[in-house]
Length: 356
Image 1: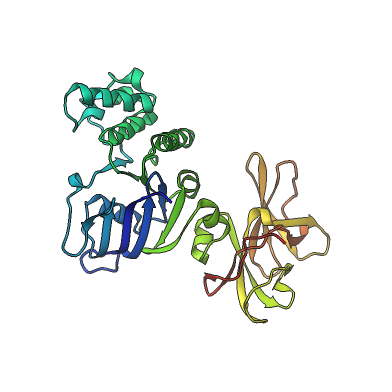
Image 2: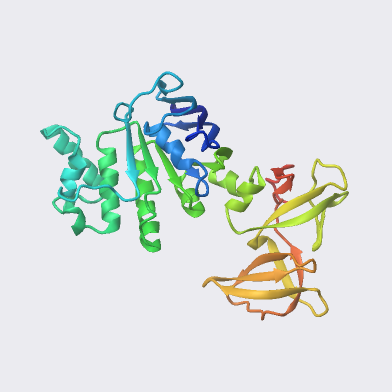
């Protein structure tokens, strides 16, 4: 295991006596790791980032960076002495300075520093644009200048606060690929705040999902997506419907059939199953009470909205070549090929990591 760069223990923060923006959050970040802090607006992710950076004082808990205590009830190390750099969504470049001068800002004006700046501009692929001003650069290029500036002081930790939110979709995809590759090539330790599930799954070596100031789950992207610990995590990670069921001897009984999945709960216990669009199959069948409500063309595939006999709506993913008209009666079934996340009172139950 790599050394721990950041250790947060029981961190809490309230503003003006209101409900806690962050409540009892504990996390670690290993050296060379990218941790994605993920959650909806107002969940506490930016407040957590600001406490790590030193822009906010915690009301409770401790923060250690490379083993050094930087914040607790009595100690508070200011931002400039924490060895931390930040990258913001608006880049925060000085408009009157060139790319080279922006990266050099805050460093000594000597030969060693100039070599360091040139190295990081090469690392982000902008050495040929060193003499350009921010208004002469594209949004993606300005983002890379901001990254080079954050890396140039060789901080122990780089913090990203939704850095790609101002970029268009195509450019955002390309830039995040470049930024992740640069961070991994340099061995940088980073915490990356985002509300975008796809971005978090791509950027993070691990994800930490926040909800209402509380930490819901920490794990690898695969664990968070496939094995959500709570109903909130399953819903927040996207493309998820929930189907009520009841525990039986043979598995879980739903209105579209029995899911042959054992649980530790007693027979008769009401549960919810999280189903994603690729878990659902359907076939046209006259006389069935489920119907196709709508088809949404997504290019490489179609998403169908289905109405079950109970009136519940679920979705199914199908190839783009399969086109079934709205209003068609269909027989709906669950065919995931693997166990599904099952929840009792909002918490996951059972082992659903395998196939059946």
